[in-house]
Image: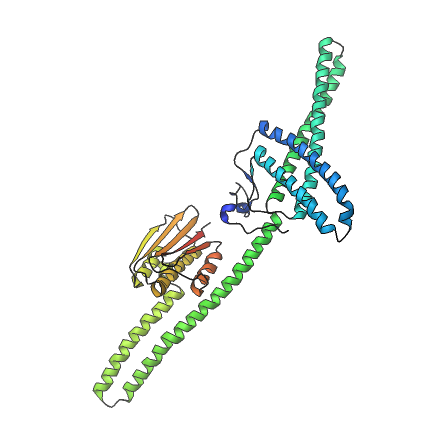
Length: 408
């Protein structure tokens, strides 16, 4: 069974300090580092659960061995074996959470192969930890006997020095062994109870491949839209302008020619206005010269619906983030004006830490289609920056579009 990696952001634990780029997807974290008075009983309980696991596989594995070798009975026998194995893993998960303070993803389900590998390592480390603890107890008994011999005077100083030296070496090795086994136990638990680094890397590669394909598709859609705007709008008006000028040149009536030239002049003004609108939809020059706030102000000026803006950004933004934020506002306002029958629109842009939040809300009829070309293009543009676009548009309204863009 393949592990489920499609969790929401709320299902993921917080990033570990000092981590790498995959820090946001760590499989386990700790709220506070527990003391050894809490971890010690957890290690001892781990020795007991390892013994239970070893007995389980010894007894159940021996009983199911013939069925596991028979191809027809193998699926059923494997299912019975894995049922108990998953219960053992659930017990280990509770132990790690209770005694070591580990937090794991709630909706992650490990594969059968990963569970069996984890239990094999867990049984080995648990039994070995039991041996180390047994050696520590044995050493404590010998130390008591050594002290008793010193008190009675039956132990010479040369023998005492030799015993103390050997005891210190063995104590150091036992303590180091416990630390190493505890670290191995924690690492194997993180790999079993959450996605491994390889799974995270594969998931990230899939996300990047999907994002790249979406960006390419969005760019092609944007080119088609620009071509359509130029062909159906500016080109048609230029053709009409050329026809007016041609009629004015052929006219023998001065008054008629003057009227046609006035009409041609008005048409040229309309062509310039429409060409400017197309240029603004492609890329606003004010974004480079004046910044995001002024570019959003230009959207408000051109909007046919009253638009209220709130801009709370106290630090410079990356150029790519400014561009994406502008197009989120521009496309959302355009969609509201065309399709929502809205009477008012509010735009809020706020920088919170290293994340820019853009929120556009209108009081229209709602029902915005997330599969439409406009919102699909916005989602692709935002996803290309590792951002997230949320669309909430129930029938009857209001429609709220929220984009979260990382600025780091």
